[in-house]
Length: 479
Image 1 (cartoon, rainbow, N blue to C red):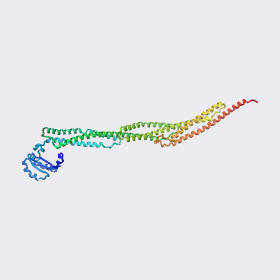
Image 2: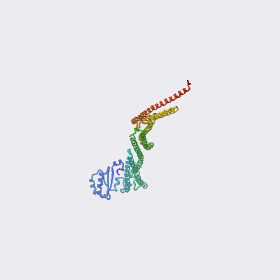
Image 3: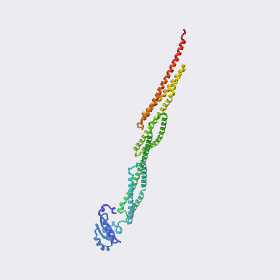
Image 4: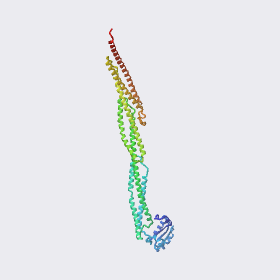
């Protein structure tokens, strides 16, 4: 109660009235001792009310005690001479409207309301500190946990007994205002509105109610903002985990790819087998692109939705895209090299298979005697060299294309391909060896063919000459 008055009034000192009517003298000294040792403010005087016959017997013992304040023993009838009657209650022959029971009831309600309100505000402030934290989870499981914790906070905020305290506060205000209404209607009697403590309590109650409402409203706003941030963080961590998983998958496929990526085969069968294995491997690898496309779509949606980590999402998406494109380029390069190798080896084997037959045709060339037969044989012999030359030309063209691919295995614009530093020297050497072998056979065939051509043309020339001589001899006159 000492806190209810203003500071300037406190400096004047408190006047304490001790009503000892109906009590014994032994209760007076403990009360005075408490006032002396425990009362937090200055005591101006202590007025002790007792019947007149009491004073003479106790004056000596009371006067011998030393107190910092004046002690006055007085009857209730004379109390109004020292204290203004307007400051005394009816039982002390004053006019101050006061109902002790009502005051105690309201005061207990007020103390309970104030304590619970401050306690709730303290708890709400603790929740506010939690929701204003800038800490964000580092992984998916932590994000889930923080979202659950944030939902628990929302339940705590929603279940905060603000409405209950509002009801209690309004009940107290209604009782205070109700007492004032009764006083104004009868201009006397018991009223709490004239007491300084309740005059100061009313705006404090209203202030506490407003603080409770605004605090919960702010907490709900913070919760919604925190909820949105955590959900975005959860999406980000899932996205990052998906990206990391796909990057690991691509890297794993790349390691498998690099095991034999420079092999081109030493024959058509081996090259075709390598091509089939690579096509199967590429098909399995391309299945990852479906997941990569989905993750890239998620990245675009998050950025378009205004995600707080949009720059980081774009960076991760770019890393995944670059990683995949580099690997995809290597797959395409490998497919191209193997396709050229299969074609080259097929043409080489086809040529080498024909060489024995072509040599036989050249070696066992039959030179007819008749001119028409000779002309047909020359035409057939010319067709043979054209076939040989065409096969050789095609083989050399495919060999040159394959060598160019082996010397520059990276596609145009893909300098970052994982095959940029591929060493195809063994494959290139093998291709050159095959070309040189074919060239040797082709040179032998040309020589054999040329020998046959000379024989056919010589025989044709001879037969034509003989025909001309016969005609000349017929035309010359006989002698």
